[in-house]
Amino acid sequence: MKLESEEPNPCLMEMQAVCLKYGNHEALQNVSLRVLRGQRVALVGPNGAGKTSALRCLLGLIQPSHGTVKLFGKPRSKATMSRIGYVPQRLQLNSSFQLTVREFLSLRIPETRSWFWQNQETVEGHIASISCDLEVDHLLNRPLMKLSGGQMQRVLIAFSLLTRPEALALDEPTAGVDVFGEKAFLQWLVRVQKQYDLTVFMVSHDLNWVHESADWVYVLNQKIIAEGPPDQALSNSFFQWSPGKSAIPPNS
Image (tube, rainbow, N blue to C red; front, side):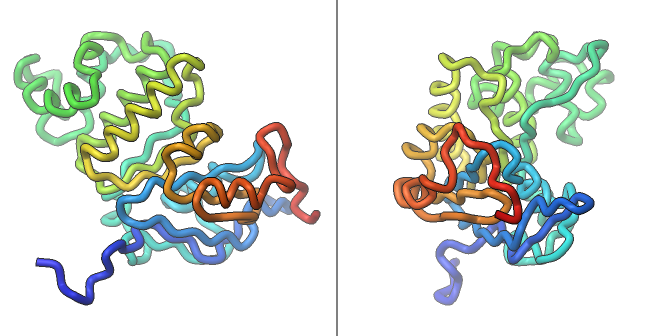
């Protein structure tokens, strides 16, 4: 039962005054952002603006120079990070990597982690629901290395959802997806978010998706230069950033 004092939209991810330096270069300057439960939040900005660095700070993959990060209202920890599924921009695989999609997905959960000792029916029983829901069941016998960009992203999301996270953090999920498949993939992602009751935080370059589907947008260029609903955030940042521009020099 929900308590009356319980916040209706608690903050799942939060950065407070985060700074990040690589040597003398300040990649992030005093960045603060919040992602509320059930939202689709987009982080946009030009190349070199620090978007991936901000995402990696949020997930504990790199440590900020200053500032604080909280997940689910608590200091970041192994327990809180396990409640977020992370989908990187691309999966770096050696050309000798020979696993099929079925075998790759099976590595994600304890019941099938030792897939090589189990028969195909046993393995598939544990991953069937996700693979059907996410429309990757027809790919199960395909070698992972043979997938297209869009197919790989769907498989990576399926891999993340096998542990039933409450949120997904995605880094440019349409990178490597052809123009014709991009719109279909992003529509599919919205459906998955609703079906699994997920919160989505996505680094994105696709401003059409941001306009149509994001609830809240942060525009980053080393620091947050605008935030708000899509129309407002992108309008307010128009003269400081457009998709064709590079990052503003940090001291400008």
